Image (cartoon, rainbow, N blue to C red):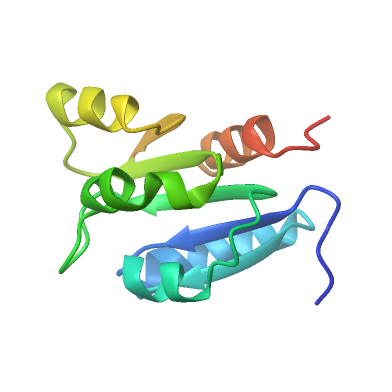
Length: 126
Protein backbone atom coordinates (compact mmCIF):
# COMPACT_ATOMS: atom_id res chain seq x y z
CA UNK A 1 0.00 0.00 0.00
CA UNK A 2 1.41 3.42 -0.90
CA UNK A 3 1.89 6.05 1.75
CA UNK A 4 -0.69 8.80 1.89
CA UNK A 5 0.50 12.39 1.75
CA UNK A 6 -0.15 12.63 5.50
CA UNK A 7 2.09 9.70 6.35
CA UNK A 8 1.39 6.59 8.34
CA UNK A 9 -0.51 6.23 11.60
CA UNK A 10 1.25 3.61 13.72
CA UNK A 11 -0.94 2.00 16.39
CA UNK A 12 0.67 0.10 19.28
CA UNK A 13 -1.78 -1.60 21.65
CA UNK A 14 -1.67 -5.12 23.09
CA UNK A 15 -5.49 -5.36 23.19
CA UNK A 16 -6.30 -6.78 19.74
CA UNK A 17 -9.98 -5.67 19.60
CA UNK A 18 -9.00 -2.12 20.61
CA UNK A 19 -6.15 -2.09 18.10
CA UNK A 20 -8.41 -3.45 15.35
CA UNK A 21 -11.10 -0.85 16.13
CA UNK A 22 -8.63 2.03 15.96
CA UNK A 23 -7.19 0.68 12.72
CA UNK A 24 -10.63 0.30 11.11
CA UNK A 25 -11.65 3.81 12.16
CA UNK A 26 -8.49 5.41 10.81
CA UNK A 27 -8.57 3.42 7.57
CA UNK A 28 -12.21 4.45 7.06
CA UNK A 29 -10.87 8.03 6.98
CA UNK A 30 -8.44 7.09 4.19
CA UNK A 31 -5.40 7.01 6.46
CA UNK A 32 -2.68 4.41 6.12
CA UNK A 33 -2.34 2.44 9.34
CA UNK A 34 0.20 -0.07 10.59
CA UNK A 35 -0.62 -1.80 13.84
CA UNK A 36 1.56 -3.59 16.37
CA UNK A 37 0.91 -5.59 19.52
CA UNK A 38 4.05 -4.43 21.33
CA UNK A 39 6.66 -1.70 21.46
CA UNK A 40 9.30 -4.19 20.36
CA UNK A 41 7.40 -5.21 17.23
CA UNK A 42 6.94 -1.53 16.35
CA UNK A 43 10.58 -0.53 16.84
CA UNK A 44 11.74 -3.62 14.92
CA UNK A 45 9.80 -2.42 11.86
CA UNK A 46 9.95 1.39 12.18
CA UNK A 47 12.19 2.80 9.45
CA UNK A 48 12.91 6.10 11.21
CA UNK A 49 10.76 8.23 8.92
CA UNK A 50 8.83 10.72 11.07
CA UNK A 51 6.06 11.25 8.48
CA UNK A 52 2.91 10.32 10.39
CA UNK A 53 2.15 9.78 14.05
CA UNK A 54 2.19 7.08 16.70
CA UNK A 55 -0.84 6.08 18.79
CA UNK A 56 0.69 4.33 21.80
CA UNK A 57 -0.99 2.58 24.71
CA UNK A 58 0.46 3.45 28.09
CA UNK A 59 -0.06 0.05 29.70
CA UNK A 60 1.69 -2.66 27.69
CA UNK A 61 3.36 -5.89 28.84
CA UNK A 62 7.15 -6.13 28.97
CA UNK A 63 7.72 -2.42 28.17
CA UNK A 64 5.11 0.24 28.92
CA UNK A 65 4.41 3.02 26.45
CA UNK A 66 6.10 5.46 28.83
CA UNK A 67 9.21 3.29 29.16
CA UNK A 68 9.27 2.99 25.38
CA UNK A 69 9.15 6.76 24.84
CA UNK A 70 11.80 7.41 27.47
CA UNK A 71 14.11 4.78 25.97
CA UNK A 72 13.44 5.11 22.22
CA UNK A 73 12.10 8.66 21.88
CA UNK A 74 15.21 9.99 20.10
CA UNK A 75 15.06 7.17 17.52
CA UNK A 76 11.56 8.33 16.51
CA UNK A 77 13.08 11.46 14.91
CA UNK A 78 10.24 13.73 16.00
CA UNK A 79 7.35 11.37 15.20
CA UNK A 80 4.39 12.84 17.15
CA UNK A 81 3.01 10.52 19.83
CA UNK A 82 -0.57 10.22 21.09
CA UNK A 83 -0.63 8.22 24.31
CA UNK A 84 -3.83 6.38 25.21
CA UNK A 85 -4.63 5.00 28.64
CA UNK A 86 -7.48 3.75 30.72
CA UNK A 87 -5.53 4.15 33.96
CA UNK A 88 -3.38 7.23 33.72
CA UNK A 89 -2.55 9.68 36.46
CA UNK A 90 -1.28 13.27 36.38
CA UNK A 91 2.28 12.33 37.39
CA UNK A 92 2.52 9.74 34.61
CA UNK A 93 1.10 12.17 32.05
CA UNK A 94 3.58 14.85 33.16
CA UNK A 95 6.45 12.37 32.83
CA UNK A 96 5.21 11.35 29.38
CA UNK A 97 4.93 14.96 28.25
CA UNK A 98 8.54 15.57 29.40
CA UNK A 99 9.55 12.55 27.30
CA UNK A 100 7.92 14.08 24.22
CA UNK A 101 4.33 12.82 24.11
CA UNK A 102 2.21 15.30 22.13
CA UNK A 103 -1.33 14.36 23.20
CA UNK A 104 -3.24 12.09 25.60
CA UNK A 105 -6.54 10.28 25.24
CA UNK A 106 -8.20 8.51 28.15
CA UNK A 107 -9.99 5.25 27.36
CA UNK A 108 -12.74 4.93 26.54
CA UNK A 109 -12.53 7.82 24.11
CA UNK A 110 -14.83 8.87 21.31
CA UNK A 111 -13.88 8.19 17.70
CA UNK A 112 -13.85 11.93 17.01
CA UNK A 113 -11.29 12.49 19.77
CA UNK A 114 -8.86 10.05 18.15
CA UNK A 115 -9.46 11.42 14.67
CA UNK A 116 -9.01 15.02 15.85
CA UNK A 117 -5.75 14.20 17.62
CA UNK A 118 -4.37 12.28 14.63
CA UNK A 119 -5.34 14.97 12.12
CA UNK A 120 -3.81 17.67 14.34
CA UNK A 121 -0.49 15.84 14.52
CA UNK A 122 -0.09 14.55 10.98
CA UNK A 123 2.57 16.49 9.05
CA UNK A 124 0.22 17.44 6.21
CA UNK A 125 -2.80 18.19 8.40
CA UNK A 126 -5.16 20.58 6.69
